[in-house]
Amino acid sequence: MRTTLGPVAPSGNELGEFLRASRSRLDPAEVGLPGGGSGRRVAGLRREEVAVLAGVSADYYARLEQGRERNPSAQVADAIGRALRLPADARGHLYRLAGLNPRLAPVTPRDLVHPSLSQLLDMFPRAAAYVLGPAFDVLATNAIADALLSPFGDERNMPRILFTHPRAKTVFAEWPVVAGATVHALRLNSGYFPADDDITGLVAELDERSAEFRELWADHTVGALARAYKVFVHPEVGRIELTYQTFDVHDAAGQQLLVGTAEPGSRSEEAVAYLASMAAPA
Image 1 (cartoon, one colour):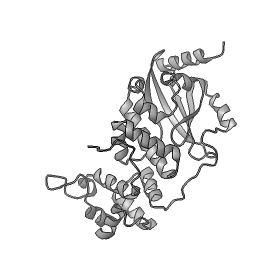
Image 2 (tube, helix red, strand yellow):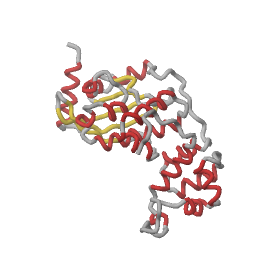
Image 3 (cartoon, one colour):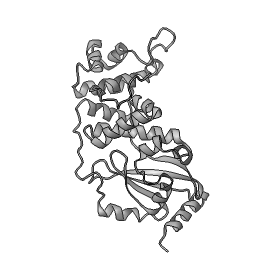
Image 4 (cartoon, rainbow, N blue to C red):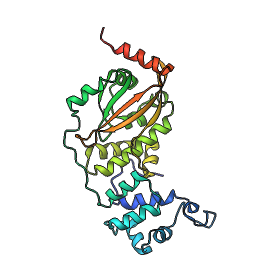
């Protein structure tokens, strides 16, 4: 139960919170330990079990979770990542929280998309293409992507759309999947850009406005935006099913190009073509 109404301040112990959340999700049976049962007071693994699996002392691991130790060696971080069965994105996030990877800094202003990238968007005449910034602001779109996002008016931040816009759960037919993946990717970006005011401000805002966001954010799951299947229910053309591919923009840290395509010959392809024709100049 929350007892305050203001935005939640950063705890200053992101590494410890991430480790606790990660071990709570790991079933003991997955690592060859006796199952949960009624004898366990907490979900997942105990601290002592993680320490044994990682080959570190229980006291040292406890200090990591408590924030009394913040700079494990690369060898220790790698051992803990293996003990917690972390996937690649989560292991990279662990390294960044431990200060072991260089923190990325944007080399261009947040709202600046390179002209050549803007031109590239229009080279996808049968796909929805757009560029996202580190806080998942939509920085640029082609005509089809702009039409897909039209139900949300002028709002162009994807997490804010998903968790605060009244039409989000109608337009995104599989809202829980899209919302979860977006929060996991935003959590990953918060590790890449720990001092980013756009990300920290957005997290504080959504923590205040959305219980669903709070729950997903508190889970500390991380994962990059990857190949994804999304279903839209557009007010003009109905159901549209797209498969998205995500590409990093290497000359602008944190920017990503997303391209969504429909199955050839499908009704979704017809719907996309109709949206393109609506957006075409007269």
